[in-house]
Image (cartoon, rainbow, N blue to C red; front, side, top):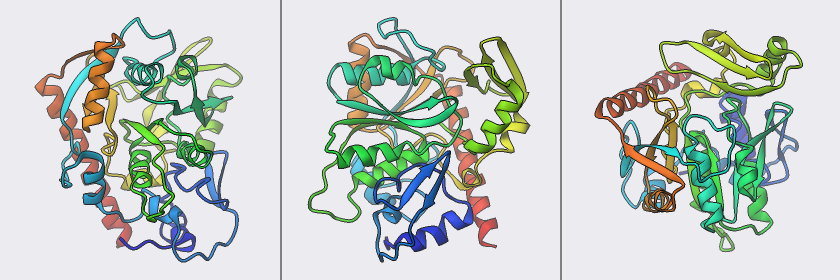
Length: 347
């Protein structure tokens, strides 16, 4: 893989609308900064090779190298990526209460990891006055505050870079597919720095089909709910085709077609629906409210899930074959759409 610099990153990714706002380039050097849902280059950097380019999920990468690093197997371009097993899961009453999405599996796994010292801190996505922002969670109470889905692009990985620079170790990181790919690239030490130390102990990926442009969606949201406090947002499974906003005064159902119009342009070329480069990936279990689908990918991820079950944080069950087939089909279709979008872009 050829590693280039900031200039090429701007030309090949940002100027073409392909930035996913994952945050991998932010705080890795002083020139890439995020502000209100956008990432900008604040200085005309002319470095020939930059880590910003090397870890961007939208530049070329060595899939075999990352697969060997994460899973100790060669890369196979499968719809779900590499996995050891696929299960259904939900949190138990052992975890503290929170406004959790679906089965609360993500929060349960992160709480277990933190309380049992598998990690020292968790890098999550929280929000401040509806604006999503990276959050460092040092307690289960902190994790509980980040339990809902934001649906907006957030530079979460900027906090991983900042934390690593400050000497933090044993981080647990939660993010979408592009963020998991970028975090795996960060862990591969692409610049071959002698002083590099991997700060990520566990990675948990979130199923994702699209992410919204933060500024555009927040303007839309304010026009719809005014000053009402938004408690949570959700996309019910097909064929509902609605976007549900829960506020302090009730629920508002909006056409999903309106919401999709605010999707980041980069999402069209993303092939990864199930966060393939994580230790464990989690999404909604369609047809079974209150449960999650869990894809266990790495050996470490398998040990993590099993230990959380044994400690009483999580309940596991088999995933029906029909549900697995549907998941594989959906992930495969996203890969096909992304491939078609890339071909159209080249033409």
